Amino acid sequence: MLSDNPIPIRLKQARTRAGISQKALGIKIGMDESSASGRMNHYEKGRHVPDVATLRKIAAELNVPLNFFFCEDELSAELACLIAKLDEKKKQELIELLSHRD
Image (cartoon, rainbow, N blue to C red; front, side, top):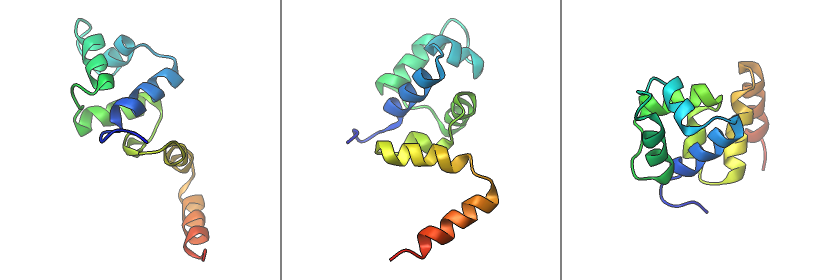
């Protein structure tokens, strides 16, 4: 189980999976080169929480859906990534499948 804020853990997890450094990620989303590493480190340590606009940029850069950062367990995080890759028709089929389960 994660702490009250799952964002730091999910951020580090997605960044590590993408094989990108804190500094490189920060620069890619528009942070100043001199502060990018420090700011990203603060986000991953939970000292600061990125605003939604920044989190959206990070999600796009790391190729994860925005809701990934809010998942409180590993299965939900994995599902969020898998569902995000589905087209609208497949998402609707999944909703119907899950809605009709007893």
